[in-house]
Structure formats: structure tokens, C-alpha cells
Length: 258
Image 1: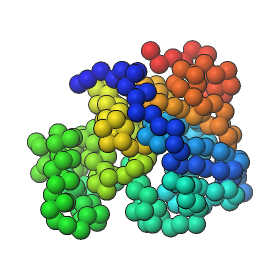
Image 2: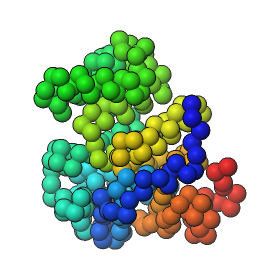
Image 3: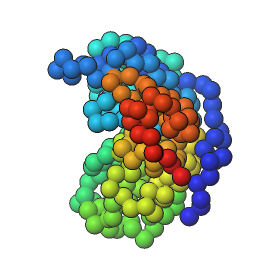
């Protein structure tokens, strides 16, 4: 497995905005989750979102995908206001991919049949479906696992499969919800390498939400820290770790990523 080098993260960085959340406020049962939030996500960056439970990280995912409408503000993807667009139109028109924290696959189907099922939803031509599946099998080294029922895969293998399934429709934007949860160190390093390769070779914008701060910060180009419905710090991993407000409200004084 290749080492994940810091300089790899900075390559291929674009200054063009692909997702913009403008002046967004969100309430759940009169409880304010996001407060006049502004967030720009650059094309082909790896953005990490950190913060305590209930701070709004998953809500931002839901705003992008259309699972949640803002009470105030706008969501813009590729320069188009999508605030009122339905979920299916966002995923197809703007090529979104989502890897949920739980589920995302059918456990009684084999690894190969899960890939085939999703490909039939997104790709009409049989030849193109087979071509895409074969590419993913090679890319994720699935050759020895094709006929194994998904429920018998390890946690890391399941996570790799769900990511591969999300890549079937060649997404421009991939959202990863808690990808490092409950995984061992070697599997986490494998996923970090996959994430970096998605950016550099597939030219995908990746947004990661996770509680494993050290693992997240070791594979992102930029991170934001959320607290009380607002972004309290934004920048490179080194910049957010040294941010005094982020230290006080999230990291603590002793945290580091070395």
C-alpha cells in the first residue's frame, strides 16, 4: 500500500466553486441546527467536516442531496440554484454520489450482483454496464470476492463495495458519511488512499463527514469545524488544528495528527 503523502493532497486543486450554500438556516422542531451558514466547496477538493454530534454535518449532506430543504437560504450546484429541485433530479443532473454511514447495499446479494443492480439503474446499455463494472472490480481489487454474499464481507470490504456502487454513475461530487467508523487502522489507510485516488485520477470532488478527526484530517485538502450552527474554523488541517477557537470548542489543546 502506498504511503499517503501531504503533497498528494494539494495537487489538482481548482479554485472553481462546485457547491455553494448561501445564508442557510435550518430548524428541526424549532431547534436551530444551522444559522446563516455560508460554505463554498471547490471543484476537485477533498473537504472534511468536523464537529460535535448534532452540530449540522449530516444536515449539510441532506441540503446538498435534497433530503432536507433549508428554512432560509439557497443551495447552488454548478452555478444553478437547486434549492427546490427534487432528490432524483439532483443526483442525475448534477451526478451526486452518496456513501451512507450504514447500509447502502443488499446483504443477501453477492458483491457482483450489488454492482449489477446499481448499474442497471444508471446505465441503459448492457455493454457500458459491463465495462463500468469490470473497471470497478479491477480498481477495488474485488476479483476474489465477486460471488460472496455481502453480509459475509468484512467491514472494510463492505465500505469499499458501497463506495464502488456510488461510483457507478461517474459522480462529480461524492459525499462520504462516517467512512472511517468502526474500521481497523489498515482498512482506514486503504480508504484514505482510495479517497485520494478519487480526487487525483477520477477528478471527483469529495466531501467527508466523520468523528474520527485524525483519520479525516490525514486525507483532506481543507477542513471546516462546525459549532453551534456555524463554521468556527476553515483551512488546511494544520490551520484548523492551530485555530484557537477550534481548540477551545472542539480539539482541545493536546490534539495533533502526527
